[in-house]
Amino acid sequence: MEIEYIPINQLKIADYNPREARSPEIIQGIIETYRSRNIVKPLLVRKKRDGEY
Image 1: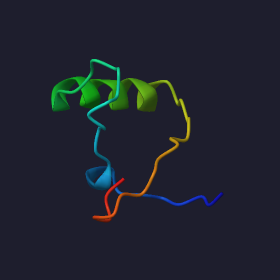
Image 2 (image 1 turned 90 degrees about the vertical axis):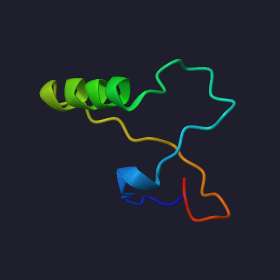
Image 3 (image 1 turned 60 degrees about the vertical axis):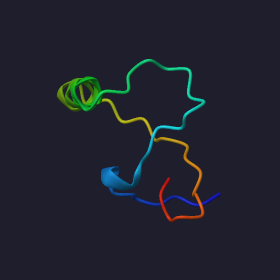
Image 4 (image 1 turned 90 degrees about the horizontal axis):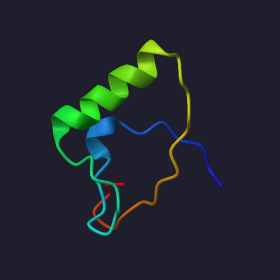
């Protein structure tokens, strides 16, 4: 396993993801909540062929 810092603009929500938060506004709200509460939780991502995650 590798640890990398990936720019948020390279992260894409998979079509098969069961979560409902798909709008940029909802995702931004989640990000702000995590930041304001100092929540640090690494994401597990998979690199796609096109270089995105």
